[in-house]
Length: 252
Image (cartoon, rainbow, N blue to C red):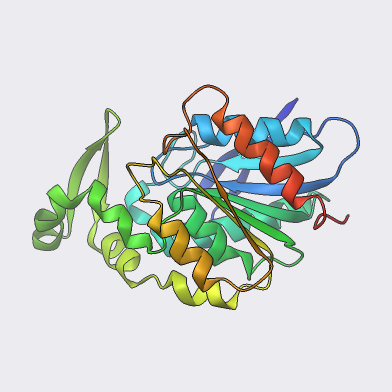
């Protein structure tokens, strides 16, 4: 079962989300942070959250600013904005009587989950999938329009058949993001998951995240998975691993 919700972003526009409700006894609640321009209905987000819900962990997945069903302009966001809205999503869940214990992030969203974890009271575990150690890794997606962004302050960027507006402050914010310090400061247990055949974010990123993190930390290699976890069963497999790993940390 799923519940459609909306909540206010940190900059005002309303964000659209889905809470995949847990089956049976509630083991905990979590928030999922999606990849760069993917959205709440991307295969990784939807399949992982549904599987976690089937194992008793209710998950909120939501579209970031200007994506999917959410209001606003994607170009007005940034890495800092994504992190802040992840914290805002957890606050929304807490206000619903569903305090967040688990953060899960995919790709760029994995970096955001790490950065947000320390600002969410009660988070007991953070899991990342295919995350970059530096948020500016995302720049390879839009490097062809960077000259126009810095010359004009913005540029139209085609991605996935849609046009987004990339703005200078977005690029500069992503470049300034210091994830390594956030990793070193983490108090929550961290699970790093990555595929050795990920051709979008190299697995060396997982090694660097793992090296920067303090114990308790864990690493799982997702053999056979692509970056977007579109291959049959891969997203559900990742969710089952997260569920088993998080079990000792979920206390409600």
